[in-house]
Amino acid sequence: MRIITVANQKGGVGKTTTAINLATALAAIGEKVLVVDLDPQGNASTGLGIDRKDRDVSSYDVLTGDATIAEAAIQTAVPGLSIIASTLDLLGIEMEIAAAPDRVLRLRNALRRSGEDRSGFSYVLIDCPPSLNLLTLNSMAAADSVLVPLQCEFFALEGLSQLLETVEQVRGSINPALEIQGIVLTMYDGRNNLANQVVADVREHMGEKVYDTIIPRNVRISEAPSYGKPAILYDLKCTGSQAYLSLASEVIRRERRLRAA
Image 1 (cartoon, rainbow, N blue to C red):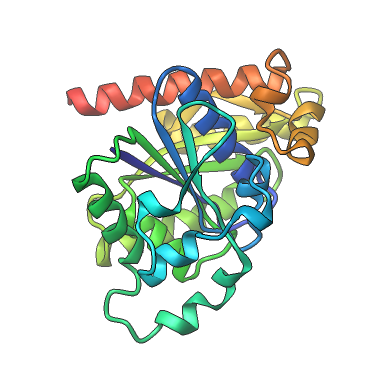
Image 2: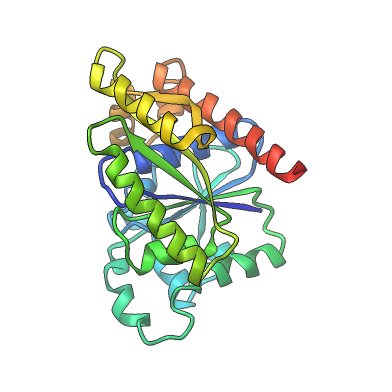
């Protein structure tokens, strides 16, 4: 089971869109995938078609220890793809478990127990809130690696440096095995000279950590969540969907190289 947290401390960079479409693409090529929605806004849950009234057991229950991974996982409309949905209860989780000695390890412990009972997920993707809080720390403590969606805009590198510092802090104190899975450039508009400059700057600074696949700005990607579908189900042929399929293939190729190393 490979656990990847999709994180960026900056909002509006395509983080949730990347999590649900990458998860869908991985499921489409035969992987058994679990999305863990750790954002109180619950956009990943909505984007995968889980109505709020159907979220009786959620990621909140997993973190409080009231439910196991298997009990909280909901099968989505995508074969091979399940989700642990989010509710607004997550807003109060920090106060509830702040005094617990294992407060940053709640998700890791739950996922490890899940692995022991052979739930069979080959990939777990965790969608984080756009901030550094106890939920984000839980996701990074549980993860093997961090996948960073990065919007092609002026302040992209500044936000990236902050995130890399956070990853270093987590590696030094909680999860020494944590690594940067890769950086995904999102919301790219080839007509924009600034976007092209950002792509060049990020590739110069981060080298091979940057995926070859670039996710374009695409109306169909933006429309899909309002229909409770990932873009790949909403419109498979659109440029955004094709980009996420390409990204999934690239993620798997990297994983194979890591395992062979």
